[in-house]
Amino acid sequence: MGSTDTPVATPYGDRSIASLEPGDLVYSADGKAVRAVPILRTGRRAVHDHHVVRVTLASGAVLEMSPGHPTADGRTFGDLLPGARLDGIEVVAVATVPYVHPFTYDILPASSTGSYIAGRARVGSTL
Image 1: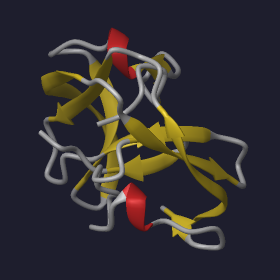
Image 2: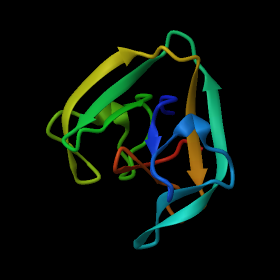
Image 3: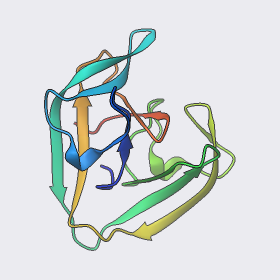
Image 4: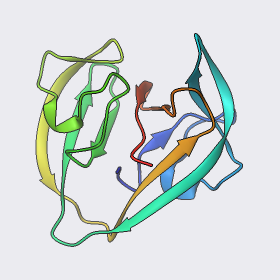
């Protein structure tokens, strides 16, 4: 699951994952295209003494995700190392950091992949 601040691509610009609700449109890989699709479900999990993986991408985006959160290609954020690629974007730094928010969040888009675009990279869903 991701940080409350995870930027998710929508037709109206990036929105915080915590602000999204079922029915909102987000960009997702659907078949061979990326298209706007509605969110089927959202998830929010209470956490305490939680740590996330802070991944800095060459694009400048910074994502904070739980170590077990899937990437779109089947790895997890805990698997990522500097020099790896996340949806074709180079990972320039990786650090495990304390998570300061009370909840983590995720969404499930209505697409063939269930993935969504966060920080300009496709990521998987835990839902």
